[in-house]
Amino acid sequence: MNADRLSPLDRLLAGIGRALETTTIATPAAARPSPAGNLPDAGLDEGARRHAAGLMRVNHVGEVCAQALYVGQAAMARDGELRRHLLEAAAEENDHLAWCGERLEELGSRPSLLNPLWYAGAWAIGAGAALVGDRLSLGFVVETERQVEAHLDTHLDRLPPGDERSRAVVRVMKADEARHAENARAAGAAALPAPIPALMRFAADVMRAVAYRV
Image 1 (cartoon, rainbow, N blue to C red):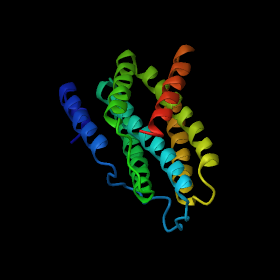
Image 2: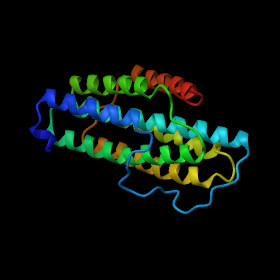
Image 3: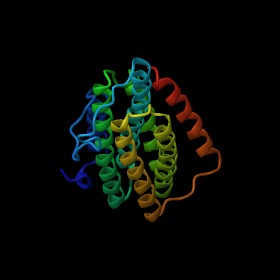
């Protein structure tokens, strides 16, 4: 159904359905095949496997939050073209969610138990930004993707040696996030006021520390 023809209430209800799907299905269907492809799965020892799983759980939570942010923004966006842009980005982030879920299963682990909480918080931020204005909403996209790209870069170094399946997923995710940020800039994103990026970094640091374990 065309999202432009839905009322705000309909979009809200559709968003609730999306939330339930995102937080209850560990490995949703992806439109693109996993970048891990046929790469061999390294024989990781128990400590390395747990570490890789912790990092990929953090990445999975990041994609849960990305889904929520985009869907919340789309639900409250005033401009139909912006809404379509946000939902297209959310669809691509769904691939990331699926790939991280697949890798967690391969590592014998699970997604964060707090995914509903992470989703609710990110949705509220996205919806709130969109209510302030579309340009500010795009600014949140730019800053979010910039910070996610930076943390994925650190994961390329922190993943256990030989875990090329996880690295392949993270590399493609990093490239996609950079493109999403550039698309948002091109669409007219406004720079966020100085305190907001710092607060976003603090919240992301808390999320990463908790999601690595829970």
